[in-house]
Every structure is written in C-alpha cells, then in structure tokens.
Length: 311
Image (tube, rainbow, N blue to C red; front, side, top):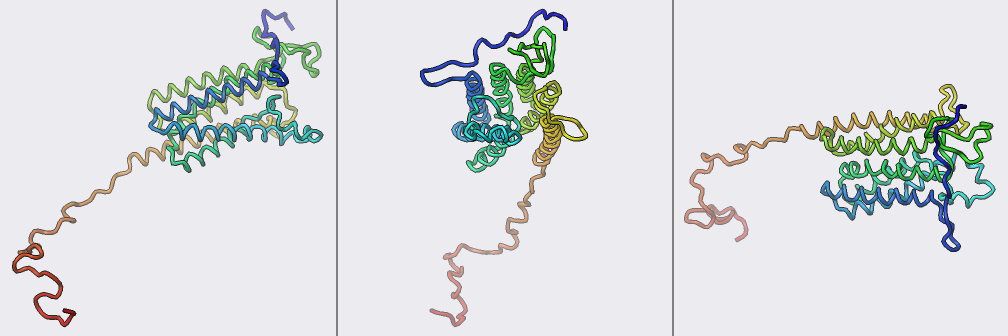
C-alpha cells in the first residue's frame, strides 16, 4: 500500500473524568446533537404556526423513544453478547445504537403524541425533518472517538488511522472513515431539505418523506463500505443495515408520492355550493303574513276556530 500523504489521526482521548464520573465523548456528542435538533425543531414548528411548548413536549418523548429504539435495535441481533452482563445493555454511552431502530420508534411515538396533544402533524413532520440529520451529523463524530464505524482498508489522504489496526487486516491501520462520510452526507441532506422547503414545491408534511429517501440512499452507500458486520442476507448478500436502507428508500418514495397526491386532492376538492335561492322563502308564498301579535294575525294555535283543545 503506497505511503499516505496524510491521514486522520486517532482521537487524543475518548473521554475524561469528573470526580467519580467518567464522561465519554460519544455521549457528549450524541447529547449535543439531540439538544440542537430539539431546539431547531421547536423553533421551526413555532414558525409554522404551531405551539412551541407542544413541539418541545413531543420532541422530548421522541428523543427518549429514539434512544430506546436505537438501543433495542442494536441489542436484539447481538443478545448473546449481553448474556453474561445484562446491565451492560443500559450502557449506551459506550456505543451501540442502531439508528434505524431509533428512527422507527421515534417516528411512531411522535406521530401518536402530536395528534393526541392536538398539534399540526404535517407541520411537525416538516419541522423535525432537517433537525434529525443535523443531530446525526454531530452524533456520528462520537464513533470517531470510539474508534468504530470505519470501512474497508484505504490509503486515501483522509483515511482514518485505527490504533492497533484491525485483526482481520494484518499490517493495515488506515481505513475509510465512514463515520465522516455519513456526517458530511447528513449535512448535505440538511441543506437539500431546507432548499426544497424554500422552493415551495412540496406540500406541508413532505419533507420527512424526502429525509427518508435521502438518508436511505446515503446509508446504503456507506454500508457498502463498512466491514464491521459478518452477517449477510441469503441470496442477495447484503448486510442487514444495507437491506433496511434500501427498504427505507422504497417506503420514503411511496410515502412521498402518496402524500403529495393526497395533499393535492384535498387542495383541489371543490367546495359544496349552497343555492341561496332554494333556502330563501318565495315572496309569493309569504302572502299577507303578519307578525304574530299584530292585528288580524293568529296569536296561538287555538285562536280562531275552536278545535276543542284546552282553554
């Protein structure tokens, strides 16, 4: 392998101590990304005419559900690793979050709660759409500090150096920085979403579908470079995450087409016209009617001819 002109060096540290507490950079970056995303989504929702308190309330639940879903998605396929130490399942600060699991559970909880709290679902979807990849772009740097999420061996100038290399690749210590590729890709996705919003071509609520398409494509490319999984789906030979990424693209495309058509139908639905002439009494039918109580007018159902009723 030719000598490198440059390389991304290993992180100088992966955390620090605050008294008896060990603080991991992975956890700091994940939390930072989540906080920035929450603030961005809340302000965008308010700009769309929604209640920012409702947005923050729902977003907090979405974040919690997202972390839970991401951890569950990571643990289930690797449950044998946690058999001897079940409590380590809770140690998310050490790494191990399956993003697709977090996106699924977070989206489900968000959709349920925004309706329950009487919020505007399409506006909330558009509000969070660019906030999610922004959080991902920041959080992915936690993988750098954990020396994980790297790809195949590489001698590119921006390859990342892994301390001790990888036992599967003897004598190699530089690899594709797939965490960096995904971080940059997510920032590009944020810009694309905001540009599409500014263009005004999409109906309210469509940006979340566009995010699904964009992130699915990005993740499919990144997964093709990763070597940290030995499991491959039968016949197709794709990794589990690669297959899920392709599925997300298909679902996002179908959802976007359906949502755009549905919104267009609602916009162009003809209002029911009321025939005012049919609802107004005909002048010829009014005759010489007089107001009750006036001279010559009936003042009650029993005036005039005696019908034998109560007096």
